[in-house]
Image 1: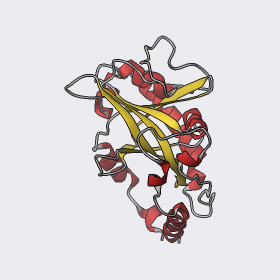
Image 2 (image 1 turned 90 degrees about the horizontal axis):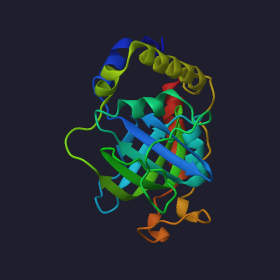
Image 3 (image 1 turned 45 degrees about the vertical axis):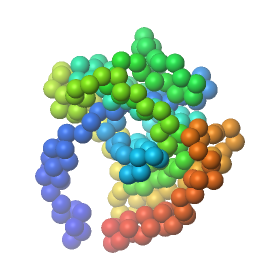
Image 4 (image 1 turned 180 degrees about the vertical axis):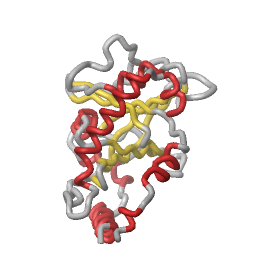
Amino acid sequence: TNDIQDANHTTIDAIFKSLDSAIWIVSAKSGPARGGLTATWVHQGSIDREHPVAHIGIAPNHFTSQLIKSSKRFGLHLLRPDQKDIALRFGAHSGRDLDKFEDLKLSENNREIPILESCYASFQCIVFQEFFAGDRIFFLADIFDAQLSTTGAFMRESDFFSQCTEPEKNGLRAAMDADIQIHRPMLEPGGIPVRQTVKEPAARFPGVEHPNRNPVDRNRGSITSQITSTRSILNQRHK
């Protein structure tokens, strides 16, 4: 019997939820189109303080991921605990259907990244690598600007859900369940194979510049070997 099928999914889910992850807003803009989403898969991508890197994983079908792929840039925001309405706005709707930034005050910047004012903190990022793994598209990006607007606590999942009404929670669950049905074939044995679409560092794309350092310093090894390794791991997993 497959170990994955035998796993206690309820226990696994409860353990992950106990981590109480930070709530992030990921934002992006490509041409006149702009969008964003609420995310928890946002991490520090390097331990080198002089070369800060953000690592995010989002669903490939989301409008925001398409904007990031096109522009090679994105913004990250930590929210204050009292900004539940912003987290809900970016988590409950698609940017294809509405402008999520309407009526929200944006800070001025010269990188064409929508950055929200009055949040806990924000980063501006330029992508140097992207890859598919599992059911996510992952972006590694240089952080070239950061703002810490306030002190104290930032919003976590428990803060957010404790403020949501039952209808709001039901709507979020329905949206998540719909996404799961779209993405599950990527994870099931015999399903959609690991995507092989990869990108070189963003400095090699015309018109995309790294503001902090020479592009030749961004040699991070063979991305092909990363994908080969990922495919090998997943092949073993599905045996």
